[in-house]
Image 1 (cartoon, rainbow, N blue to C red):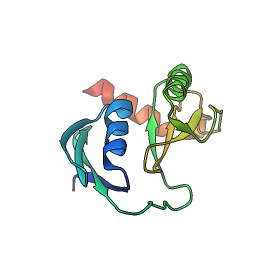
Image 2: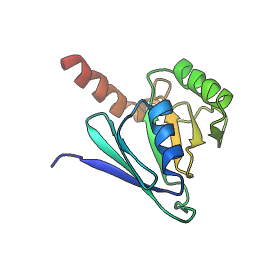
Image 3: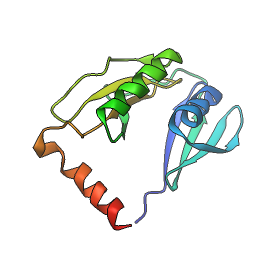
Length: 135
């Protein structure tokens, strides 16, 4: 079975889709007031319009990993300067340095690195690095 797509509701499809394109490097295949189809990393991201505010479950979020602490800090600085809604400063955690921010429409994102994670949390990062090296 192959992972196919993610689908998110939004009360502002255009603003949410723009965040995915401008901040996360997605490409927009289709866009309109009620629906947007984006692509990233070999799968689709669907933004579906809703006529009401979307309420997310506590702590529901999407996580993106960067290779280094410096890249996490730089992205936080850049997004903050661009007016992205920040839910935290950059902070160190046993699973690595991270921060939380919000896309238009209220979707929460975690941007992290495991480069400085405690040893027991680095396995996933090291497996990916090995897989990338084999390619």
